[in-house]
Image (cartoon, rainbow, N blue to C red; front, top):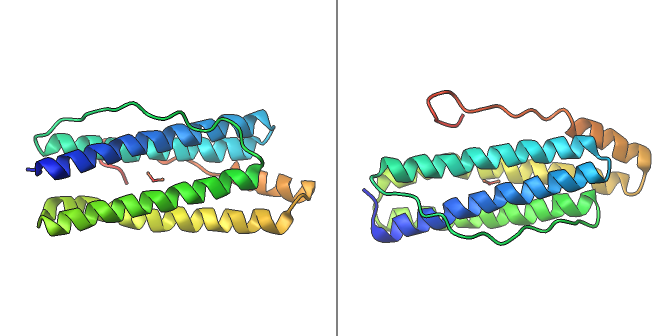
Length: 173
Ligand code: FEO
């Protein structure tokens, strides 16, 4: 069972995960518009992963006898200065998400809500990986700068990212 404060906080974050999905969907489309098919694939996979995150919150809130409250979302940006700008925005957003997850965890600790602490553990680990991946790509993009061949190589690499669907039980990997 969730406290009213925890249920509200989890619902807020569920909506933030949905915004994350929309942000990366927008980036995928813009990368495609620029002819960067690999980056478009990378951001589409990121969109799919965010929908898994959203579903994890959805399932958890429901499993605790609560129900989901969807809110209106701000429209994500639809144009970006460069591929580097897209990944910088991604890292900035993921750093914000890490802060949100930490705040949710602090609330769960304060309330001695052990179930929610365990639920959030997966996200703490996931955020380390997300930020690390973004930093690695930003590093490569800074290295190649405006070099077209270098950008093409990175775009090819981004095109190899594959979405792994969660197991059929509804639990994300
Ligand atoms: Fe759902 Fe990228 O954090």
